Length: 378
Image 1 (cartoon, rainbow, N blue to C red):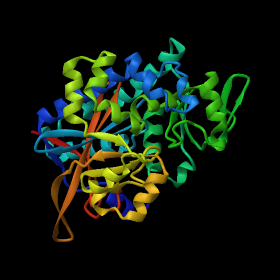
Image 2 (image 1 turned 180 degrees about the horizontal axis):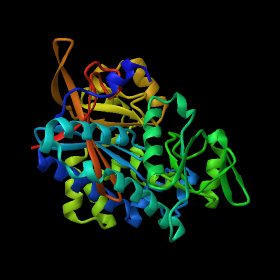
Image 3 (image 1 turned 90 degrees about the horizontal axis):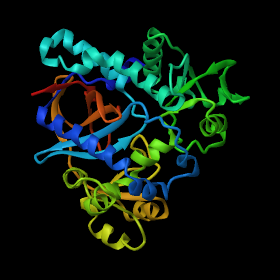
């Protein structure tokens, strides 16, 4: 990674967040995961999921990521991710800020991060295997050495190996299954830390991983089932509908919390296209299978030609919630950047919280003065 890329990965400022906002974000995560456990909800969202997502051997998915915008009315959930990146970077960043800022950044995730990471992988193993812990883990992504977060994979490997688990970084094409065992470059792989954005493991190059997932040759986390339950963007259309959630058995308090904190979300169809175009300034358009902010459009900047392409593909429209802002100084000049907050969780419990600063319509790590930033709670 070039020095310029490193510079844009981390911001030089912290982001101040009210403790009550963090508490509300955590409550929202727990309410959402409670909804995901309801049989009616599961049947509904699995109806549009790929076949590979219907298999559930037990793992809950490491490093769930919940992204929020913070406004005058409190936090609003913008997106859910099953392979949320940046946790290892942010742990390093939080520790660095603790050195310079002392108790101002003395949050529990700073000291507890390493143990929380090891614990979640051990729990994923036991959820499928019953007892013990994995002897080997493969961190898997497409051409991992070319990924901008490859240094994070190396940090993850270092932490896991320090915890006594042999860890390698591999491409899915380096995997193969034989006699009910997954191998990577000749080594037995017990558990896969899955960083792929092929969420259903449907691509031909992911055949070995798909086979290991379906026949249990290895524990795969996060996996297609958890993505289908929590991170498919279509799910927001029902998670923002309290009547549906209460009919399925969610408590009224939890349903109302999700209603208040999840922006209205609808699927883009031919039936509502005319209204969405007329009201486009109120909406943000996202591809159902998108990732990394690719193919997203703020309605106020949408052209008719692009809207036609949206109609030809599978999109949702989410009510636009403006992000909060942070003033930064870059090369002696002041700039106002947008802010979002990400919670990294496991089974609804907080592992780490951090912010991202950016310019434009979505986070991109190409903004001078932007990037990951630690949270300072007030």
